[in-house]
Image (cartoon, rainbow, N blue to C red):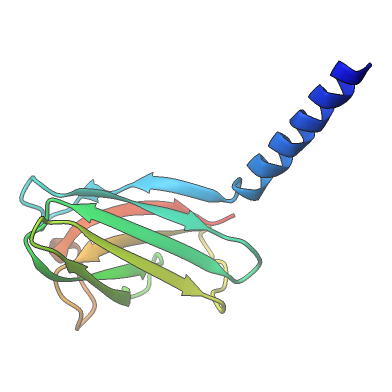
Length: 135
């Protein structure tokens, strides 16, 4: 009986731990038209509550300098959400969060990395990108 109770307690703890991380999804970044073949990365996206989105970008293989993270809804212009500083090793990290984002009408958005901020990047300026599904 004690073994069953201990196993049940462990299963409950593991179940709650997994549920706490269930909302985060890791999306690999695909090379876009402006890529030179060495770039790679991923973005982890979490939707912890209605209207809130958290994204963490990790990139590798880029030339040192400033790059820009953006999102794009179908039929709308790209929106730059922040700057990624890439170090001498070609790696960069960016954390973005919003509290006021409505669910896109199509149920998904594009997230990506481009080499300029303004005007918003077009498809031929995208280095890395992915399609993120909105819950």
